[in-house]
Image 1 (cartoon, rainbow, N blue to C red):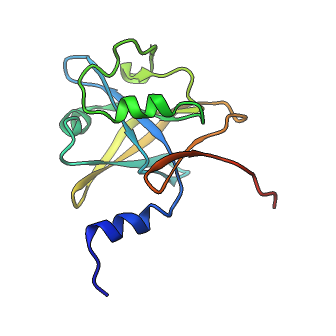
Image 2: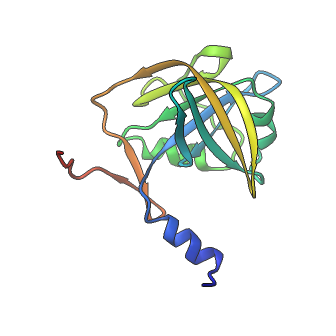
Image 3: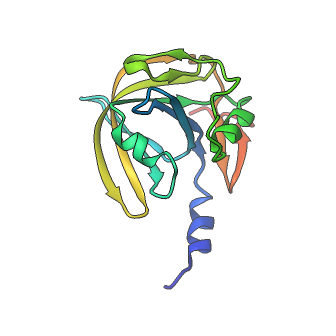
Length: 163
């Protein structure tokens, strides 16, 4: 069966994901970051996660050179922050509160969870680069409700189904 990019994107949009902001510092020590919903766990031992970034992103080279990065899993009330980091402007940290983490990466303190990572590997993923990170520090608010992404829009949990 043949399909085009739009129908492929629409089908993938049916899969609900969380929303993250990935941050790092470039070779000049300046903080940068992007919004990403292409995030997943990979391994418990060693503790590995992955995320991917479009090769056309202005930040791809900086992430490829970064030795550390931080994955911030966003709270349901952080959709504006997600939009802010999804824009292509260079001044993403202007007016944004952050503190230094492992390897100097910028840490956004209000996120639901933060996974500070050492860059473990990078792989070809077609029009994306797949980044694997070894998690070296975690902080999380286990009562936080996550921001979701579905059908090209941000969403929040409306109900939790008990097992």
